[in-house]
Amino acid sequence: MIENIIFLAAPITACILLAGILGYFGNHILSRGIIFIDIALAQIAALGSMIGLLLGYADGSAAVSYLSLLFTVLVISVFSLTKFEKQVIPQEAIIGIIYGIGLGIAMLLAEKIPGGSNYISKTITGNILWVTWENVFHCIFIFVPIALIHFLLRRHFINISASKNNLPYSLNKVRLFELIFYISFAIVVVYAVPIGGIFLVFVLLIAPTAIATLFTQKWSHRFFWSWMIGIIGSFAGIYLSYEIDISNGPAIVCLLGILVFMFALAKIFVQKMKRS
Figure 1 (cartoon, rainbow, N blue to C red):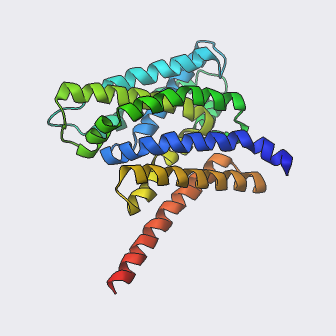
Figure 2 (tube, helix red, strand yellow):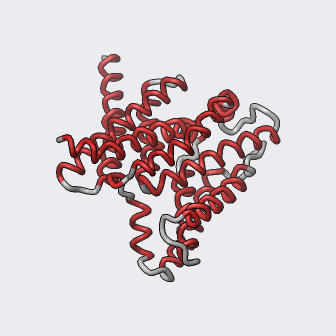
Figure 3 (cartoon, helix red, strand yellow):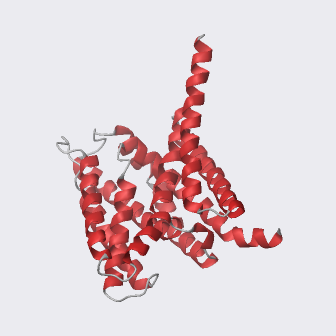
């Protein structure tokens, strides 16, 4: 029992960190209606890593991480400037195009890299059970400054997210805050995907926030409950995968996805009971 707790301590800590930072960003992403920005960014991050592998750098090396970060920051910086007073092309459409290009190039590069298909599979599913304390402390080092920046600028980010297609400030000021927001989000995605995989990061971003939004619209409450739901779902998925020997990432994804529908149906049922 003690050995199991020691083994699972690092993955559980990583889940707490990811659930918190992704739950926060998830509230903004859901309010902005750009749901698939996370998957698009994760795909671009994976593309940057694959280019690093193609250049001969080792998987997991600093060079590969920096190339992944560089590609992701460049793409998201361009995306942050696509905010206009009158949005002719929805940003969600731009996100879809970015994802399609990233995935297409990644599939082409996979043909040129030994074990390329295995790398794509690993990037999608992740393996959070094998997270080390070095990974955890690295994430803390990256996430804490980002959390501080967002705490100091929280009012501006909330105003922009809550306004949706309207501009609460001048266009240039909005674009500046968008640039800060999306670059910090890109950094989080780049360091979260190698730990959890694309699907887990996406679900931790959206599913807990979707559940919290069903019951409260207050930002602080949504953030707190999305964090708690993300932690509970992650713990349950890790325990289930460890006990019955199944993949941990897909287990957490399925549990959190099912929870969304369960809570949605529960809310509908309670509302009908109140009306009757």
